Length: 232
Image (cartoon, rainbow, N blue to C red):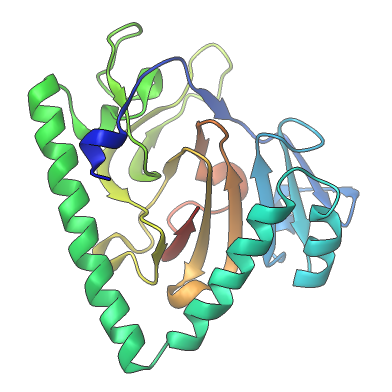
């Protein structure tokens, strides 16, 4: 399916703002979240506006079993391990080449659609998009998008505005190439997991946006850190 075929018409999108942090089920702080290798946030979780941190995969799995996202987390972890095994192999090198070609293809399609609609590529997720006035009918991307700029007043009355350069997260991408360590915001239709090292290593942020949501990555101590990702 092409990007054009997957485009949906925009409607108001919720930006997930994080104001509470739980580690091992206990109240914590964003500063303490840094040490946690697995962090989950977004829609469909037990408490709105809460990020959940886990010290290891087993504790994440036990917690996930009691949520509606158990299957998505299991599939993401499986994809993570498959991808890690490819690092340093010929198959892994080919996966990087394939990912780069696919990213450029999708970027080209988004740019073509943006020219047709008369809006910036950064507006492809509805009302939160830069230069996208409410009710303008700007379409929604079916693919998670990362943005390298977020204008955030930090108030409830003025929602954050996402803009700058855009990077699509297509399936499993072992590196974000020149976009490594640049993402400040994310539009997520479904689930997207970001890692702070290439080939799905390092700390991970599981972002759930059903049906679609935006995230300010600084809320999760992940501003300018993402280097690879998995989208389901």
